[in-house]
Length: 264
Image 1 (tube, rainbow, N blue to C red):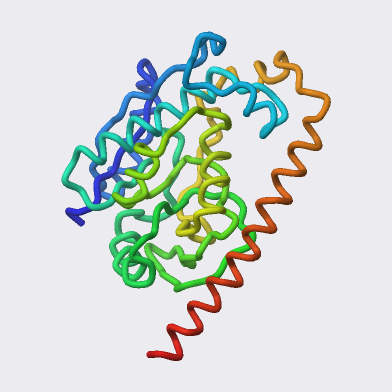
Image 2 (image 1 turned 135 degrees about the vertical axis):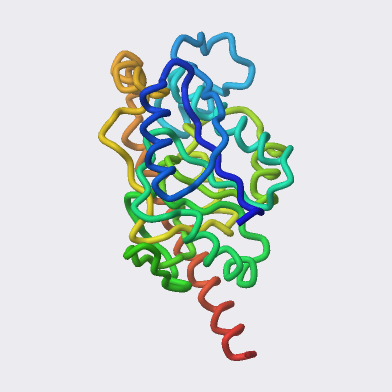
């Protein structure tokens, strides 16, 4: 599929991880471009103008850590590279992604259908490990893996394997403001409200057992970054608001699909 470009986000010095995902993609005859990941583990967040610490504390109930900023910057970088290309779509894999089937073959089948259903679609999460508040669209079978394309009204977390439309990538890059959440939390916040987010279930891509190096220090740093006393409240408020919005959007989406079906 010439209109689809595949990118792999990989930290400099992580040759073993690059070799591993290269072998996995070679097995499916999938070519890719490597995009160097941004290593944010040693960042001094107090000096970053692009980081909104006050909003992060309100929204997440805690401060972010350098690894999370690095992961966010990495996804901005790969979206920008995609926009500078002539490709129509971008498949973005982090280097711990583990495809269970040929992702390009799956997307070759599904993307024309999605373009027809929703020309304004933004982002597809194909590496999600959980699924809530969705609407099934169509079933696909590739290399023995059967999965449904679903409208993900409550957009799933994780960014190990995502697919951009040009409109979606441009909205992410051009609309980027200050960072107030990890990139996967931001995608949920954005797409749950905006709509036009999709995924597959069961996911056609999982991850290896290797911890992500770009976030390797995050868990330890979060323990050192003492959570605010209101962390639990902030989290529950965030989840509840997103689920209420997602359920309303699911109702609207299903009504639109029903109207489309009747008109045909």
